[in-house]
Length: 464
Ligand code: C2O
Ligand code: CU
Image (cartoon, rainbow, N blue to C red; front, side, top):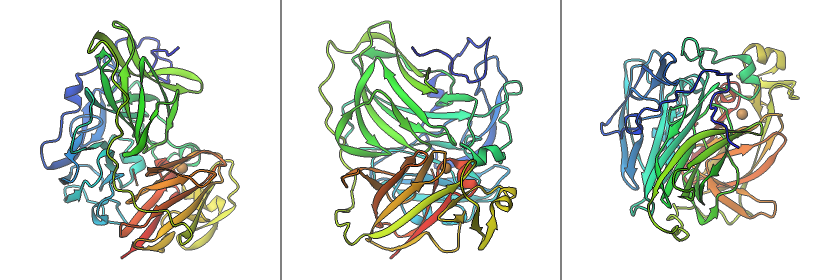
């Protein structure tokens, strides 16, 4: 049974989890400006103090940016933060110069300055945007939003619902985000986990529905490090897309499914709970169930459920069948607490683990800590690459490749769906393949943002 408790701290008196109207929270962006600033919001349930977050507007989790496939996303990013920042469009296969990775594709935009982003939305699907400078701090403070690219013909659903899942580390007494962004324990263990879990910035997100309505749920894991293991109750349907990329044939939604940081799924689900009942999106945490979102059912939209949905139109998929010619790459992750890393190369010199730790560096890819002068791999445009990804640590890592999607090869070599973020658990190894069809310098890093800040960050160059 799922409990109503959305808090991880013991919260005796929290009963009034009044939600603000969803519309107020997720107003569509109509202005070409995307202004990052600090502002107070009622993040915690009413009765708790306000929280000063950093956001793209006076709201948590937003604004949602929405365009039609093929259109351009044009935003003047205005930085009113006390720190330099940049905006990355996670999962969009767009122009490298617009990728927003400070230090790699652009200089970070200093406070008071702006940067014009203008990129093509080639793929329809569920994406998100977030800060890509000091991300472990800036994303934790709230700098992210959903980025939805609509199919030219809207699919047959009654409602299209974005659910941004996050966890925040807040002091319940002051309501403020704790400023321990570089805490060694987070850097060296599972990353910065929050104590307040939200959906679209709310403790208890509620959306009234009718029986037999078909909802498109776009679920985004925007957390710094938390894995969300989710399940449905009173809702049933199909998994339509991973990381923005539709699957060839819709798969029944599994009983539970896990999203690593940065990952997304699109589900088409029908409300099967009876009138008067609450359907739920639940979260499983150390074998306990919690409510992540509530869908109270009242009335019904039709006497019967609809038929099985047609698949979503596929996005462009590069040809990666010829693996005989593929470049062979390897990425071995090491380090972290209880890891076996004794030394590694950082800023060009080999250092002992102790010296690395003193400098807040805990992880390495192929024995190299953090960004390097030369890329992990240099590929020529159109080349197919096959990479073995080995997690030789005792923590999960969510590896995100910018600019191109990859497929995971099954044991027998069958390619899986296109993805942009690969969740690896301790000791696991995977084979991925991708076509280097987008020229430029592409970041490749762990999306546990504290890990990226402490060594798990590299890049791949695709030369024209
Ligand atoms: Cu979602 Cu390099 O990030
Ligand atoms: Cu990691």
